[in-house]
Image 1 (spheres, rainbow, N blue to C red):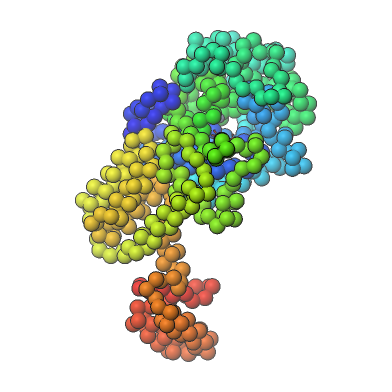
Image 2 (spheres, rainbow, N blue to C red):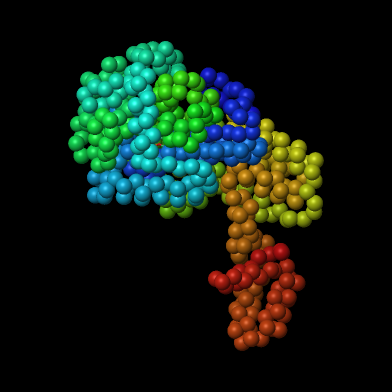
Length: 474
Ligand code: AMP
Ligand code: ZN
């Protein structure tokens, strides 16, 4: 499988450290607000990567952190903790909003078919690990204490900025307007490992440490949580492209300084979902959520389908028009699948030939739009229906669009059968009522007679707790 590696800036054959096993780490959400559909684009594409690795036989262990402390309003370690800001906004405690938005995040993930990683670890669970690594970095001379905080000394590295060939001057991490730069830093890109001093005295969660009562920096979280569950090496690290600098750059700096060897081989970055007015961002306050899309009548799987239609290394523009197009295409796809009949034996040769289109697409740097095209190729092919259904089910292990489930639901949603004319529909509805009355009167012979009579006309009755519906065909 070929995968683009942001570290080497080229597509490479993916080779894990240990044959057959993949250690994968994902930056999780900062739980001070709902995830927006941009964040979720990143998680959808990472989910496809994880599932495809499993699909081609790897034993994957995936770990994700939950950022519930230390992520400040500026990525340059300035400003207020985002969690404290969120708690104030909602007049709740930090832990209350952390729990609420963590649950909301996983509820959204479930709707979008995103699998929960094998390990999910909130940063506040790992304070001892953070302290141990910060102590180690101080001992090895990669960190210093200034003004009460512990900083990583980026000048100690031969190469700090690993993801791009930026000039020194371009490296300054964006310090937001109204936020003062930190004079304690020896080099402008040094970053905080442990805070004890902050201009914001109301930091809610603090822990004792060798440097005083304080809290961890954001970057140290991911290095330590990865180390705790995956050890000293990592095969793939994922995140949105905005994480590449400074977050991932700092993760590499501190992890490799601490271990004294290379840490992670492949970096998978997903480009942003943008609106016409720019990047979708949680901190802007106004953003689109899965619930909002649902309230407008969109199926969350139609949003997943929209995301799969473009490559993860291209930014994607969200407009309702674009989403409508994807939603309509998704509906049509489901309608075509609903027409397939599970008859006959799966034709093995055709199955393998068509499956290859799918694996070729995903083997080529997770080309999801070509993988979706492979679905249409299946439908257009001369394979029998059983083969087509088997392939669709197989591809959906990775695509997770619940195609068969949607097709079944469509078939069961009566009376939408296009071939049914109004007279037949009226007769069927009348007979369903008569049959219900017969059953109530325990006249089961009459109820069966009605069922059989309708079966002869090609109408199948489907009984459920909610009542009886009908469809044309079996
Ligand atoms: P956060 O909750 O802000 O820590 O971000 C969670 C994930 O979403 C990170 O991997 C970010 O890089 C990613 N992300 C943030 N904004 C966007 C966006 N507009 N489009 C895609 N991914 C994003
Ligand atoms: Zn991270």
